[in-house]
Amino acid sequence: MATTPELLPYHQIREDLFRPLSRVSRAYMLVTVIAFIVGAAGLVAWGFQLRRGMGVTGLQRPVFWGIYIVDFVFWIGISHAGTLISAILRLTDAAWRKPVTRAAEAITVFALMIGGMFPIIHLGRAWFFYWLLPYPNSRLLWPNFRSPLLWDLTAIVTYVTASAIYLYLPLIPDMAQLVEHNTPWRRRFYRALSLGWTGSDHEWRSLERAMKLMACIILAVAVSVHTVVAWDFAMAVAPMWHSTIFGPYFVAGAIFSGIAALILALVIIRKVLHLEFYLTRHHFDRLAKLLLLMSLLWFYFTIAENLTVWYGNQPGEMAVFGARTRAHYAPYFWTMMFLNFVVPFALLSIRRLRGIATATFASVCVLIGMWIERFVIVVPTLSNPRLPAASSFYTPTWIELAITAATFAAMAMLYMIFAKLFPIIAVWEFKPHPQEED
Amino acid sequence: MYLIGEFREKEAVAAAIRALRALGVSPADFDLFSEEPVELPRSVLDRPSRMSAVSVGGAILFGALATAFIWWTQQNYRLVTGGMPVFSFWATGVITYEMTMLGAIVATFGWFLWESGLIRKRDRTKPVPEIHPGSMCLRVRCRDGETAQAADTLRRTGAIEVLHRGEA
Image (cartoon, rainbow over all chains, first blue to last red; front, top):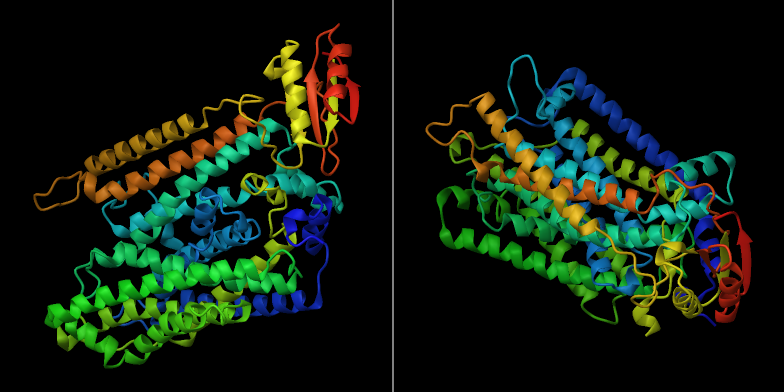
């Protein structure tokens, strides 16, 4: 009896993985409708904000960056799930990556689309976002290329382009196969997107070469993107932001939250699309180990960051440090430490406890913990500026919360639609691995 | 004239290509069709590529253009910099870097589409075989007089079926 999917006949693999595309279950419809309603509520909230102005949010002097920037950093971090993990596993020829990569790459593209919306939402006057683009205008004024906000724009545009191509390339052979057995509109859709793929060795070799090259490039881009996001903060001479390790700290945190998002997505896909044979305990075990590794790395960076501030004892920095660890924001800080370090360490470091259920639970904790981490980084610094008299608190309003909830719903909806249009596991990648053959 | 040999084993495909090349068929006359990538031993059916060079070229081009554009805009609308340089590479280096990467990405993708033939005009006279699950089809272009010998070679090396298609 076959014990791994690679040992199944190819037509069986194809049938199993193409089957979810043609059926719509009641649970699928229910989740999509709920996601749509929550997403629509978020759009209404945004419409209200556009009409009334930024005064409807909780943003006020001195806290001008609130949940929108937290969401922006969080979603850009989640986007590291895919491309970075997929690229690393592809370049290291990890055979177990096969059922994982496409799900991860899709997370990247959708998370970037959602994350990229937040600077626009945060602008208030969203219709002026094009002022960031360098175009000849009547005032002869160019964007300031020295501004980290423009760095963000270029980094995100590059990353979205790279991720979309990286997702699209391995989809081509699968879409070419989907042309054969489908409804007329789907046939036209897949034929157009597969560009007349025939499966010749010219095409395969070009594809494999392009995937290897793209994996190398995308690694460099992914690291730079979250470093640039970190520099949005670190380039400001603000307490507990102006840190040299913010770049790697953010990249580590991004990969950490990305792996958690990937585990959660895979668990849901496995259950909803009945892919238990393809997404096995073995895959979750590997991902859980990666999550544990990143949890330790994140803990190390957090300690390094906070310990140096505490030891330095600078009044401006200590005000923020105190607010984070002992005062108003302490519940957030200690919850973050518990969810991001204690839970994953307790559940995933003991082999006997490490399973699909515990990995899922740890992932949910990490996702919540990493969202809180972004909040703890952004808000206390702004609440405690160098002028103590200007200190204040920030509380988000229902508008901000509704928009935040809508982004999670949008992610779920985009993912559900994607899983119905394209095979969520790359079918052609189930070829026998050369090393396995050896 | 084209011959299409259907194979089940990649070792048989490699043997067929070696035998046909010994008969004088050029590597450009072979095309192997499959549902998944087939990894043949080195030198059996090598397809040299310039993709890496094109990728580096795209990176250099975009990086240079981005730097030139930033330099020009800084000169075109001079901001008050308080005695600091009007154009600073370090302060705009992130944009140069990202555009360099974008150049590499666009060039790689564009070259992939070109090299694979997906966006080139197709030669409709070349037959595209239907691939059955688990099989590989080797398409060989033969000159008149070589067809019978080539078909025999395909069968001898393990082709389960050999078809004759079109005009050369």
